[in-house]
Length: 394
Ligand code: SDX
Image (cartoon, rainbow, N blue to C red; front, side, top):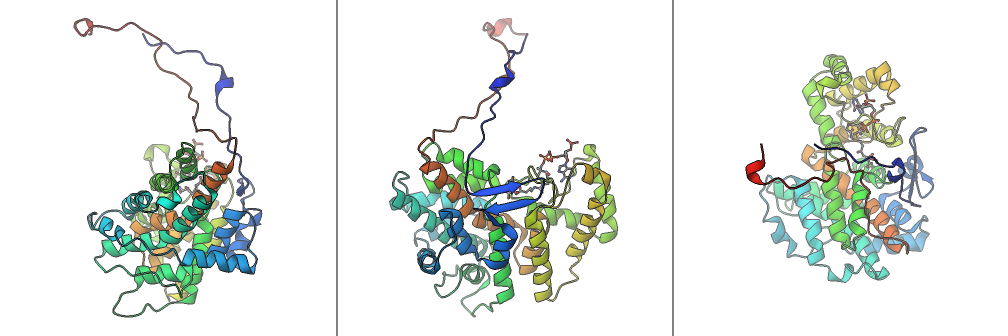
């Protein structure tokens, strides 16, 4: 006979995480990094300047900006031994599996950045992770297509370097498009941090036990991989390709309203935003720019996405449940147009979110009151009962 303990609702843990890094007003659709509006940062800042802001709390002055950029640029290369780690994966391994493995393994190489009690080591770990994620992501892509790894170049900006490592080949220099490089940098800014989302909470919980920063970021990558979280941009493209054409979009929206269908509109809805995700607005503008630059502005996927957004935003079901496009709705279309395979989409999200994860990890470590995380539970299992010998069980 299983009974249930009665429990005092007061036990339900209402503890929330305190942070000074990112502010979201879900009802108003506002997102601020250290008090600066995401649309302004996307318009005027760069990803590395935004990294400095998230890590340090203020925009850098010219000399701080230069020394931070130099510190990142000079740590973009991986230990040569790590190339062998890549060779242990199957060529068709998902890039997120590779990133999880390689980032976790960084703690086996960079012993001077694992003592989280030492602020200097913490800073080295932060800079190393921000610097090496593009190299790791690009190598995961190159390995999957059987092309040679491209080394990072110190004469290029952060996003430009990532694009040349991803799409460049030794046989000929990569033809850089300033429009695409700027779009890539802006996409990184949009994904940099987002308060206590599932993967950031995972990084904080892992870090609260004293695990080294590389292992904590690997845990964040694992959590981000899920289709309900970082994997949604890959799922949006799969959804649009399954819908197939603009005239079938209405049917898909109808199906998404039927709970028994198990079908949800990927890239729509959010745990916090009950208004238009401010990142999705910038992403949509960036989508137009990139498709224009690539001469594919009548890309069918974009037309389907815009028609889906138009229908859903006029539909009572979505309006009443406050479901709007989120950051993932347009990003996949841009990345596909830029030449990334869908399997790389979440890897790019992880690349960009690393600065948010490591900033939140550092904020937690610096908090003197910090204790190991221990989420509370409400026990709803069997009450105590005597053991039943095997021959007495039904
Ligand atoms: C990210 O947390 C973060 O900040 C995450 C993120 C970040 O930057 O880190 O913003 C990144 O993860 C963006 C979200 C990406 N995921 C997707 O796009 C997947 C599709 N969206 C969902 O599955 C869904 O919207 C969630 C998972 C994001 C949120 O799900 P919830 O918590 O169920 O949303 P909700 O409580 O607001 O849902 C309200 C209602 C529910 O129906 P009822 O129970 O009220 O009857 O709306 C329904 C939901 O079933 N609903 C949807 C829907 N999303 C919610 N119905 C159809 N299509 C959808 N996409």
